[in-house]
Image (cartoon, rainbow, N blue to C red; front, side, top):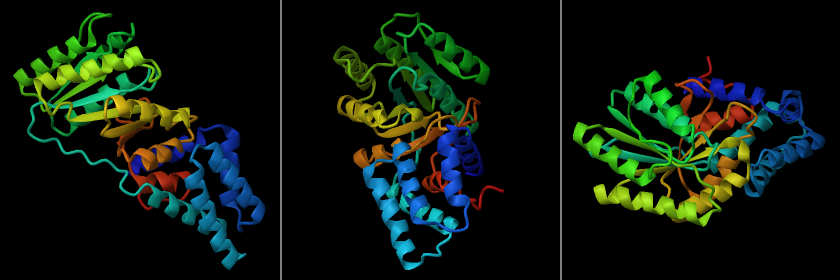
Length: 310
């Protein structure tokens, strides 16, 4: 997890200057005071951590401050990180590829969330672990999606099944499943078409997609993961609710935590829906998709020097 901590901590430095500078100022001082505590509360709200989580963090630090007015900022940071880690207890997704051949992973989400890139990175990660992977290019609605995923597949040497722009995405999924089953692939990753969670017709097409896959294997897709842009804030919680109702989710992947994302919304999603977080995207490179760690995430948020950093 060393790379996760280092990259996420670096990502915080890439955030909006006001957010990062204010957060750093609070925890770089020798002592914590009531003014910095109020500033911390404002920052946590602006970072989309949600009322419940913010109140728990502030209450825990306030209790410590009441007991010891000389409490050091880093001690307060450790308290905050501990509360955040506790809030994410059970959030880490643990994936075990069984003997389905293929084990089907469907990636869903809105346009711009990073699904297509994530599908390729996920395939690369599995291949690095010695698994055989097939990509299904089922995002046939977006003109550039096929070219994008084909480019990644060629770059990373991953087999792919694709069709032309405008083809029926469920039909591509069917062909991809048939190919993966015939070849004995360990994993089939389906990059579904991006869709707005507020559009009923698009969500119905997602239901159709699921029905087609189940005709091949009643237990498929074995994993339904929502890919969320970490910079969207509280809107991502609305996305998760809507998709979960139509296409029951078994996991989350949070992307773009390396840039301006404040990263707090993933806490609210997990606390409300209890959907595990499997991976986070921390950059543009193929190996920048990292397994999620609640401890490393919390430590990076509060600027704590994790023991695995060196």
